[in-house]
Amino acid sequence: MSELTHLDAKRQAHMVTVSAKPETQRGAVAMAQVTLSAQGFVAVRDASGPKGDAIQVARLAAIAATKRTADLIPLCHPLRITKVAVQATLQEESHQVTFEVTVEAVDRTGVEMEAMTGASVAALTLYDMVKAVDRSAVIGPIRLLEKWGGKSGHFRA
Image (cartoon, rainbow, N blue to C red; front, side, top):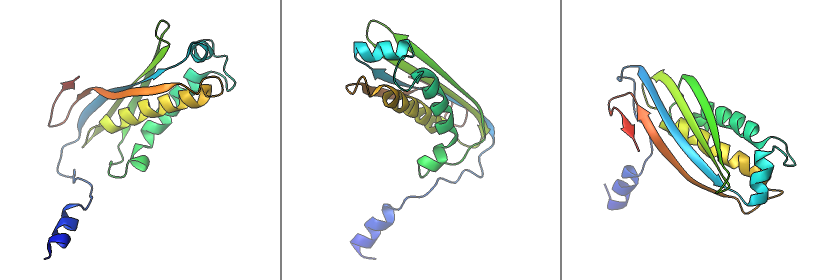
């Protein structure tokens, strides 16, 4: 085998086999933050933006995205999600909106990517909802806050 062929073999992507793993209760919490201008924050807070209630639409988008994670992230397994909860917190002083997405499932692999996808899409949706009044909105950080269940156990950031 040539060196190049060997290198190409190492770079192949494939899903991790989870069939031997037991089904267990698993969960994860992720967050995404959006920093807005004063005008953008008021539009979100008062649901007065040109597209309507940005928080409610972002919550729905997060739930929908969570359920479609395996369609969006190529090597994620489709999971049987049993819970998605989306909480939005508005911080008046800093003009920030933080989405926290909690996902649970009884399955063979974790739900970290589902929680992070939901949080990310909530932030992107909020941006879309207010971009007419605030194109300077900044998304980030996006991060995993906690996960539980499975072989690796409990993690808290």
